[in-house]
Length: 351
Ligand SMILES: Nc1ncnc2c1ncn2[C@@H]1O[C@H](COP(=O)(O)OP(=O)(O)OP(=O)(O)O)[C@@H](O)[C@H]1O
Image (cartoon, rainbow, N blue to C red; front, side, top):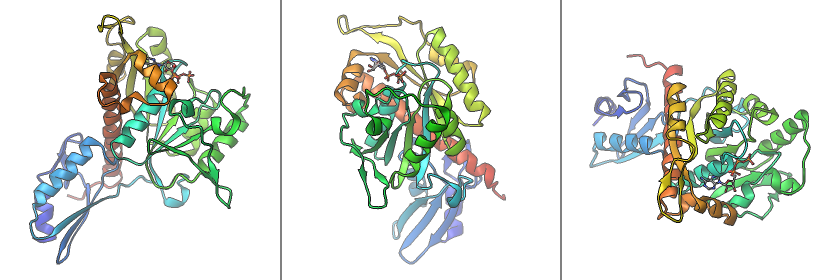
């Protein structure tokens, strides 16, 4: 089997989101055939996402080699030169945002991060909520970052995730009054002077609203996409709209809308009640032509998980945990769509 025959075989592999075969889309970067191996480099950008794992499996099937080892690698064009990319070793930066406080944004960020980590991905969780950093508590991380000789910070790890938070530096209960320029300086240091290593996903928990932190992040870091967390009430949805507008102004992709507290899971009767009305998050996503990532019920186990530092997404037996896992899978899948679409736009296939 030579490279041309392999390329032809790969025309049978369809990208389910972009709706064409991967060769026509220009998602096959290179094919190399040696005496004992077939090496194919694909333009895939969302490691461990179910969709891209499926594409890779289909590629192996299409090649169907029995006598040579098939090695697949992935390299997607991000449009950034390594030099001007502040987080060059981080493949995808995902901002978790909410229009208003208290909708469960940190809970969502922690569970998405832990969910991606459980899928096998290398994950960083960056608590950028300088005004109320609470991620360390939610994952029970009390170990502060270490420091190397050249004064970079080594993030502590929990559930396989690398963590960084203002709480490590100032203490969770210290009131912090930050002005814009200080926020900018501290945040920039927090991601530049940290040894993140190679990450597939960095999840950034933003403070609620549309303030200095959001601006700093969007101006200084190549954000792959944003997740907007909302509850189904009209007031929360109104604020979520402002979040959408902010990301729109900065040309930032929105990976989708995640609904929290969609229903109330009653511990007494076991039933689920739509106390804030039904389908608010889904309707909001539809109206704004955004993907809907999923809905999580108001479930006392989520809060206990958060308080005890054990994200519920890791509880295999919990239905609410499965709702978070579904959101994590969709976040990864939609990250892949953004990456592959950008790649094909930047590298239009010749035929
Ligand atoms: N689906 C849920 N079921 C039960 N409790 C929840 C759920 N989501 C969040 N909580 C609880 O609600 C509280 C607030 O959640 P969280 O800190 O995630 O909100 P937030 O939007 O990040 O808030 P902030 O405005 O402080 O940033 C926490 O105690 C959390 O455990």
